[in-house]
Image 1 (cartoon, rainbow, N blue to C red):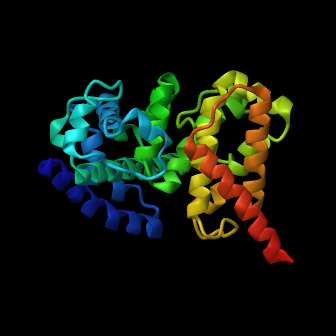
Image 2: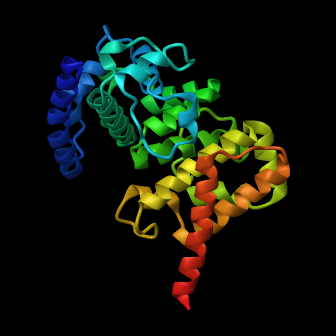
Length: 300
């Protein structure tokens, strides 16, 4: 446990100054020689299996009842052991501490940032065959969540980094909300950079379009993803600001997002009348309705 935490801290200490230097110079060599890039490029590391195992460790921290909880709660050692028979459970006793989970999330974010920088370097023609190739971590996570939809709720509860959590949600929706050839064309990074939460919500603004998406991905999954995305919105004070990538990915004001969020749930219910809502989703709808009234009263 402590060894893993030490490893992540060492990688972070090397990564952060390189990230700052790269922003100023756009020199891919800075990251090509980073400890993280060399570790992930090692033939001894089975990267896909490593990512899956890390995901299972995160999933293992939640009871089934935790799907309806808003707070990010890490159970005690006793509770974690009592949940060992759960579908999401793996017997990683050495990874049961909260600090290790924080290190895992920190590692995921660093790899996502590295993949984004690598993609930018590819676009600028700064990479070569010597840099090798591996699947981006986002693609592996999305594939795992798509083929094992029961992992979605506990993973989104455990992975609390707002910017990247929203990115995962948007890319998940892009599999079902794409238009034309984008819907079937497989991209190397499995992303649609122009997709924003505002655009996703627009697909649910009519009963017809909502019904089409619900048929593809399921009403429960749609509600779950929209609720977690809205939770990220609430964590951003000014969604119209261009100062953060998270705000840009939202694409509208909090009042507009809240209104469209409620409309989306109404149309999902029309498409699937018997669907149940979790406490988490009910609280999000109540918050959205309250915020709309508050923001409208402030405009008067």
